Length: 458
Image: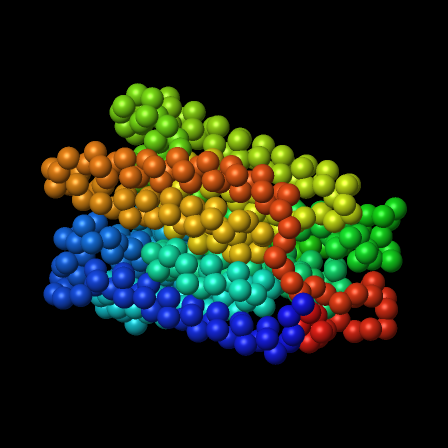
């Protein structure tokens, strides 16, 4: 076990390296935000080099088209047109992401300033994530802190806050000395906040509830008031806390303007598996028919039905597999099950954006995956994250895109195979987490809930 001093020093080094990586990530995107600016605040060079030089970011793009440049507070005046286009202050993300977008644009007058202020706003989320991963798993945290995905995608979209929520939930549940019920409620609240940012952490509430239900680590944290070996009340408390958090965050926007609030869900529901999505659905169709799937309505309708159905089935499979393992070894591996759920979501969803690699990286840190496999995933992701923009550049400039298309396809199918591998591995592999709550007394003990040094320095 690491000493407390060594743990703190290592976490500090991880934090420093993460800061340097974030700076490199900002410089990479800022190449698209230099030079002359049009009256609407758009940097002239953005449309000229964003694909060729691979400095594109959704942040800079969405300066226009969502009333962000007009500093309109999101959702309260937005809606969708009959054909599904977003107008007014509506944006395609859940409410907390929309609020962060508004905050990043508050002092901005150009897309370059929007990128800069958004980077300053989001960088602390990545740094806190690095610190927690360093405390949880030691040197493995460098995969997050200095990994290529952070350079490529830290400021590509608004992913860093949602990644923090999932890591913070794991940290609160696995490395603090509150009772399991209290830790479960705190973790569930963080996951619910993640749901209000980018949806996917909400799926992790289910495995967390099962972890609480079964008494946590080795079943030894079972509350004294548990019924026949299962803490039904504790699990229900976590689920209730998550639901209340989602309601509290969303209701003001629903009451303020339901159409604006619902616009993000309508947009995502209507989105097609097209060339911009990088999913197995689009590239699978392309490989079979040597044509784009975009105009095949029957296929798009099939994808819109199959994708969520298969995702839900994979969630059930992961949870069931995890419970079977619990019956064998006495601990429900909620982190592994959550990671497996994420892998199936990334694989089966009709949209796969390259920056989703940031969602996965913390699980590759926290779960003992062989490092050559991690390198392979990073390489495959880079093929997509870089290749797709070079592919767009070739298409838009009349250049034969065959080489770029092959690079993208290698990345898409390699990632897909690796996501299947991770799905299985996460359910079986050991955790790298090297800290744990001290033997926390069940609820009702005289020992107070608190965060102690002993729990973090082991």
